[in-house]
Length: 105
Length: 180
Image (tube, rainbow over all chains, first blue to last red; front, side):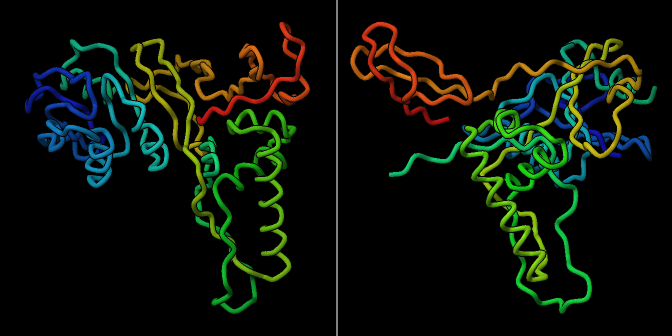
């Protein structure tokens, strides 16, 4: 299963980005092969509609779970429709590697 | 212009696309059942809620719910009698799922795949989870307004504004048009 984590940078030591639509990077972690891919968010500088565009971007990668600090009001119905699980983590100090180790527990 | 339709809340969409009758030719014209109509049948005939409760769950008024349910039953009957396939598609809906909280790692998560049982946290895998109570964000709130003095009053579900009287000037109230 693929899990997307919003990240502030492109390495495992970087911290989780508290915003979903305008995060810097998406860390896409594959639980089966235990590998992480860092993709820059193409919609970071969008004036409007960054959230739904990010949903589309993530869904096209086959992600089934998304971890972020916060989700906007527009994205939850779209995620529900696509059967993608949302996880809200209110801890801006957690790094990507911390979250991956939590997932593997 | 007519008032826009209120967006219906669907908490449990079907996880398949529709039904096909056995033993008829494949090219029968399908009946399109909207998601809101599916949800109306599910709430009323499967979960056995009454229409008032079901309308509150879907975030529409009780008469509107009855209209949706009526349309749903007619479509199902039409498909049964004529041997037409049923397809779930469209409707003015949004999908919603409930939130859960993990007491071990402190995260919040939802559970969109309703057909699977939820037993552990989506992040740390512990079983110390609890449901976050619904804060009724989407609860329908109709307001009655007095046409003379402008006094407003929240309308309770199941009553109509024309039956309410204004406490100040004792005249009949009317429904305030609010577009949700």
